[in-house]
Amino acid sequence: MSTIDASRSTDRNLDWLLENLRTKTPGIRHVLVLTRDGLKMCYTTGLERDGADQLAALAAGIQSLSLSASAEFGDSIGAGQAMVEFAGGLLLIVPAGAGAHLAVVAEEDGEVGLIAHNMNELVEQIGVYLTAAPRQAETSGERP
Amino acid sequence: MPSTTSDQPAAGVRAPLRETAVDALKIVIVGGFGVGKTTMVGSVSEIQPLSTEEVMTQASVGIDDASRVRTKATTTVAFDFGRITLNSSMVLYLFGAPGQQRFWFVWDQLFAGSLGAVVMVDTRRLEESFYSIDRLEHHRMPFVVAVNRFADGPALSSVRDALALSPEVPIVDCDARERSSCKTVLITLVEHLARMHDLSPVRESTP
Ligand SMILES: Nc1nc2c(ncn2[C@@H]2O[C@H](COP(=O)(O)OP(=O)(O)OP(=O)(O)O)[C@@H](O)[C@H]2O)c(=O)[nH]1
Ligand SMILES: [Mg+2]
Image (cartoon, rainbow over all chains, first blue to last red; front, side):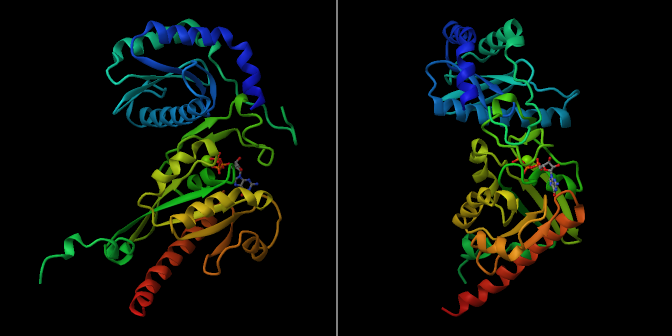
């Protein structure tokens, strides 16, 4: 818990870029960057903390299943983008930097092409900062 | 006779064991973080298992306590899937659940249509299996307990007491890395299921 909260202060610039993605793209409700093992890294202000935790976990699950699907039925292994449509909304997820994904929750009638384009554009710009490093081998009893 | 048989619920639903030539049974494998669920599906599956392992990131330090399984570098973020043919008439479809609390929302999906479960426990962290057992009892799903021996630990009888298992619940030792050991666990579960299904009509006929 503490590590994530500590990292939030250094993520101010990222927060701003996520807010920017949201405000410049019609239909986007929330933006969240998550680690591949399902933990939130940073997210836009309208999203509650509990919602962010939930979104991070389920987006990681979806991306992991997408990866298996691409390994089984695609030409090469690699996480593509995933889209889930449901009554009242849309969820899009794209790979970000190493170890991370970028997720967006949008209005049902949001323009998917534009949203995905802007997401990928953001990843191109700042993907190198959207990374989550593997954890070090644990030494006994270590706590952050 | 009125043709009411086709839309009669319940009765046949819980006892499909003898009704089809090839029985496909959906089994879930649950338990706490890092007890060996993915390892078990991997060792016993006859097909390339579906795995949704992701590298544990630094963000997870302090959230996911891996101090007891230091070689563990990845964690299940959706579910494991594998298949094993026990004999000419019985195929098990195995679904390994994710162990960490943030993925528990997947469990209800996995439980749907399942006939039975394996609860994996690590005796050094018994309390982590309470949640699994509660959920299974809540769903009234039959289960067996598999004690994955990472190190020497208490005897099965004391584990049974500590988990407050009712007497009919089988408990067995297991090494999740050994195919034969995992297979024994699954056979124990299938026998347990058969026993329960054999018993239920007897109980029903004596109100
Ligand atoms: N010594 C020992 N190690 C084991 C045994 N079974 C599994 N392991 C190791 O313990 C770890 C267990 O990991 P997993 O199989 O991923 O556990 P899991 O229950 O699927 O974990 P989550 O999905 O993250 O909840 C791995 O590093 C295994 O190599 C065992 O019987 N003995
Ligand atoms: Mg696992």
